[in-house]
Image 1: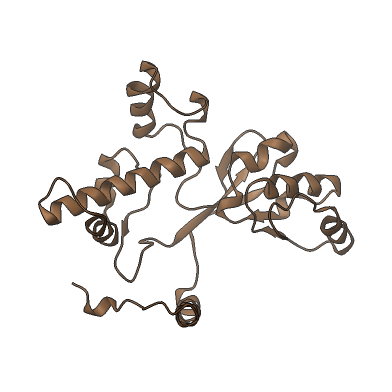
Image 2 (image 1 turned 120 degrees about the vertical axis):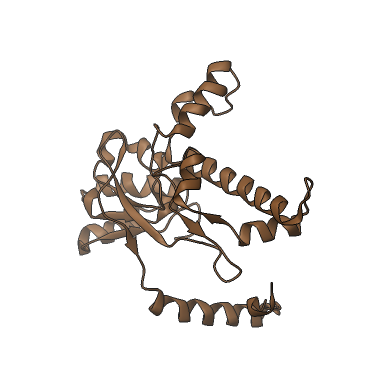
Length: 233
C-alpha cells in the first residue's frame, strides 16, 4: 500500500478471509502501528506477524500497548539494550548533568535511540579512520567516505567503545558497505523486546547476482557511471 498507509481495512478484511500463515510488514512509520491495530480488529495472531527492521521499534507497537504482544521484527545487531557501558556513560555525562537531548531519559536504550547512537558511533569511527590515514585533523568529505569504506571494528574495539553485544564485528570495503550481514528476530512481550532467534543470514550466493544485475540495470537506466573497486587503492 502507498504511504502513509493508514487506510488498511480492506486489506485486513481480505486477510481475515484468507487467513495466510504469516503476514510480513514492509512498512514505515504509522503504517506499522496501523497494521497491528487492524490485525487486532480481525483477530489475526500477532505471533504470525513479522516486520522488516524499520517496522520493529517501540513506535510500531506502543500504540496498541499490550495487545501487540507476540509481534516479531528484525533486529540488525541490536534491540532495546539499556545496560551497555555506553548507556551508563550517557546517563553519567549527559542526563545526570541536565544535558540530555532525547525527549525523555526513559527513551535512552529504545530501539530507535540505539539505532541513532550506533549510527553516530560509526560516523565518528569513520572520521577517526580518515584522520589516521591522512594524518590531518580536519578531513574532507572524500576522506571520510574512504574512512567509512575501510572500517575495521573487531570485537575488542567495539567493547572499548562501550557497544559490546550491541554491534557485531564488521569490516567494510568499496565492494561491501555493510560489513556484516546477520540479523536476529526480537519479539514484543507487551512491555519490551526480547531476542527469540539465533543469528540469521541470507543466502549471499543466491542474492548477490540478483543485486548486481538490478544495480547494473538501474545504473544504465539513470546513466550513472559505475565504480570499479578493483581499480581503487
